[in-house]
Structures are given as structure tokens and as C-alpha cells.
Length: 268
Ligand code: LIP
Image 1 (cartoon, rainbow, N blue to C red):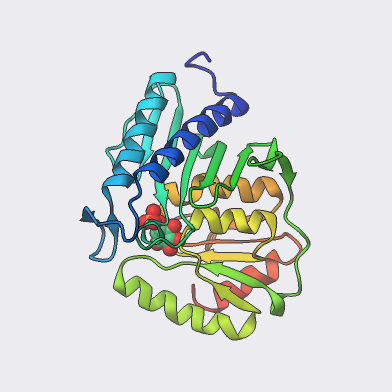
Image 2 (image 1 turned 135 degrees about the vertical axis):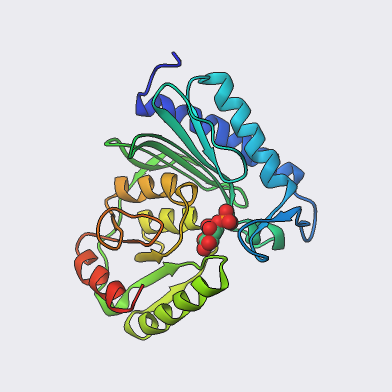
């Protein structure tokens, strides 16, 4: 591939190749039982393990070798400003707490974007091998097993939505999120806190949940899974415009206006 290429399918192909290699590394390095914490980040409960770092180092090296002019924004390392206009947005292990404890929902998440447009995204659940990929304008796909296109199924009524959500690491932010969820819970079927935003967004894409809401997401939590969700037909929104750090909510278009109004009314 020419380093200057920004063709979404070519970017997805690289994301898949590198993501699979990183997932294999994470699987191989994970010890039995509890994984030790190497450090903490934004708060005492925001962990990083040596394996998060090893996964990101591998992804950085592979992307730099294939596309030396691209930028790189990863959860665990310094931001690299590129010259090609394409930037890779990477979470080397999304769901680090699940990974530490052995809860089987943690993912490698790799996206390539140009400006605000995410062009390609790949998410692999390291624990069970499920894979999702999408290109801008090209649809969303399950890529494990026999690859097939996915579309967000028609939703139930508002009161029957199964809503995925998550909580940030900052105790004060968490307290506010808890209050908003308390208001939401009696008005929907139930909530799920799976523990990996990229997997929540892929679940929205293929209908293993009906809706999603979370505050405080970083670009690497959102980029790849967000493209999978929107290319499958879900609508994503922020508080008063596109999704951002303040709020990400998503649902099938048939229920999105009502659901987004409910989320706002709950104080997210
Ligand atoms: C985590 C998310 C999780 C969210 C956390 C955190 P990490 O990412 O995917 O769902 O609620 O705030 O951002 O830290 O495991 O890569």
C-alpha cells in the first residue's frame, strides 16, 4: 500500500491485520488468574498493565512500518503528529479492568481517521475472538467466522430498551453518572455495564443491546466502535451535536429521538 493512500478498505485491511496480531499477543501474554497492575492513570482505579503497553507498542510499530507518515493517538503512549492527514486512534486493551480480572470482555480497538471522519475501524474481543469492522460509507461487518454484513435491528419501544452504559474513573464524575443512571433505570428494560465501550458500541451495532449512553469517553474508546455502530445503521449523538467527551448516546433511528430526549431528561 502506498503510504499516501487513505482508501478506507486499505486502512481497514491494515487495522484487521495489526489488530489480530495484537489480540494474539495479549492472549499469549495474559497469565492465569489476576493480571498485575503496572501503574494507574487518571485516578487510583484507572489501571494500566504491562500488557496494555506491549499491545500498543506492537500496534505502533506495525502501523509506523506500513504507513510512516501517519499520526498516532493511543491510550498508553505519546501522540505522534503525522504528515499524511491520516491518524490512527487506538485502544490497545479496551476493558482493562475486565482484562485484569478475567471477565471475558476486553478488546483491541483500532481506527483510522482523517480530520473528524473515521474512515475505518476494527474491534476484536480478545477473550472470545469476535471481530467487527467497518469503513466509512461501506457498511459494518462481523469479520470472525464467515464475514457478513450487520445492521442494527428495529428496536423495541422506549420502555423496553436494553441500554449499555459505563462509568468513568473519576469518583466525582461517577457519582453524577450514577445519579443519571438511577433516573434512567426505571424507564427502560434494564441496563448493562459490560466494561468496554468499544464492545458496547459493537453490541449496539448488531442488536445485542438496544441503546448506549456514556459520559467521559476518550477518542480511542469511541472511534472504531462508533464507526461500526453508525455503519450498521445506529445513530450516535452528543449532548448538543456530534458525540464528544461530554456525552455519547446511540440507538436505532426509529427510537433515537425519544431515547436521546430521555437521556437528556435523566441529566446525563
Ligand atoms: C474503559 C471503557 C469503559 C469505560 C471506562 C474506560 P479502558 O476503557 O471502555 O467501558 O466505562 O471509563 O474508558 O480504560 O478499559 O481502556
